[in-house]
Image: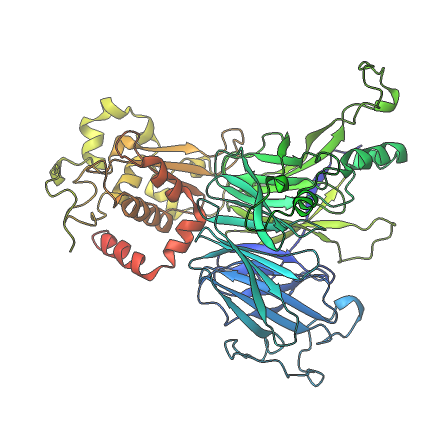
Amino acid sequence: MAQPSLTLLSDLTPPSLERAWLTAPHPTLPIVATCSSDKTVRVYSLTNFKLLSTITGGHKRSVRTAAWKPHVQGESVLATGSFDATVGVWRRWDSYGRAEGGGAGWALNSSDNASAPNGETDDGLASHNDDDEEWRFAVLLDGHDSEVKSVSWSASGMLLATCARDKSIWIWEDLDDGDNNFETVAVMQEHGGDVKCVAWHPAEDCLASGGYDDTIRVWREDLDDWGQVACIKAHSGTVWFLDWEGVDNVPSPMHGSAELASQWREQRALSGPRLVSCSDDRTVRVWRRLPKESGQSGLNASAATGIPSIIRPTGSDETWEEDAVLPHAHELAVYAVAWSRRSGLVASVGADGRIVLYEERVVNHPADSDAMDTELAEKPSIQTEWAVLAVVDGAHGIYEINHAAWAKRADRGSAEDEEEEVLVTTADDGSVKVWTLQR
Amino acid sequence: MAEMQNSNPTILNVADLPTRSRAAEKTSGNYGSGIFAAVPNPSDFLSSDSEGDEDLLEEPIDEQEIYDLIKSISDPEHPLSLGELAVVSLPDISITPTLPNVPESPLQTVTILITPTITHCSLATVIGLGVRVRLEQSLPPRFRVDVRIKEGTHSTGDEVNKQLGDKERVAAALENGALMQVIAKMMETCQ
């Protein structure tokens, strides 16, 4: 069997001529949004790798980050965060220019705008170039004091988290009232430095953040109050990015064995999805929440004792421990990490211009082990280890890579029952590349 | 202008600062001939079409060239250059391969150690930023610029180093008009 390798499928063209920071794949359509230092966001097709439209006029400085709101019907909603300290929310009807199915003709003929119910308030901040007419600048979220570094929508799409150099995390509720109103739900200021990244749990209203103070923090709502439930101090440099494991992730080598897979799920059920982090200290680490004592969830405990909500019950605290340090593969800061919800593979990129793919593998096979630890009646737990699957040096030439994200492959129909995926990487020269794994 | 933090700095005579010609004559004992062997022949640049010429793979930028790029930056509080104040000095500049395990990689890391004139100088970050900006604007993008405070010369060196090493903060600083005015003023004395 040939060595697995990451091969370039295509560049997204034309690229930004300035630094591109991040590329966010749409949750359902085959499109991505690329944030650029030129203050714009470019929307590209993953079907033909061409530019579809450019969102301009909303931000006065670099656009650093963007995220698509999930579960929106008939419309695409994009939140953008900028060095100008604001967060923009943009909307566009998916019916625009949809000539063929599956969004393939998305925005290619935007002249047909008769169906647009233009009753939304428009602040007039967006420029209305002919090409960009279809993007509506819905609202500007003003609150941060300095550069916004990251934005993330919760799994339900109800909550938007934003973070900035001002050391704060804001949680906004999208009221979905047709008037683009957002309500500030919480402002958390525990971080000791810039908050570089926020990422919502894939299913629950639980937020993870990382930052300049080298910590990773986990936040939950407890009795109407958002608070920190864990602070992980293990990295020795800025935590640049975080991503969650998929809810049903099973390491791919287990896919052949239903028994192994179900034992894995059982073993992991109480911990929930893990977190992966990357840092200026050049490491990539995986974190796992320790299962709570049975029936002693913080919420239940405090409700039972009737402790007023101003006193934060310690029962809500969570203990997170290091599950793994991925094999050392980066020589400089690691700027982004992405945990595939399809394949369970992890990709990391950074200042050394390298893309690294990691795979989680089973070390022991409990079914046929000699059961050395017979003092335990239970089956021994499945042990895994991480291995480097593929490395691409100089993936964007001499340039630093700022971001990586997994997306569904869309340039050809997937023949097999399992859908194919691509890795999208974003670099300092403005280039965005789409890769596929050959194994 | 606000009160100076160091009103009486040690000043080097411009004529005593290392230059390529003089360094080649009299300090070869200090630096050896290694780095000078790498000085490119101007014709290499003229004929730099992508031929498989071995000479083109030679390192064309050396420590002296880096020094020449930054020595004339002005100090933000004195009418003197960083070279004259010995904030930057030739022996504190080094060029190393960024990925030593990937011999074919063209990436190189330029490390510059800065010596602030006084240990609590709050302008150390601005000086460091000026040096980083000057080099990022002058050097080809295959260089990774690493500007840090020389160990033991500043009370909050680690803090300053972390800021100067933070790509995102540096990028944001470049979009900060007030800060860039200060940097531009420092650069006025650069050719």
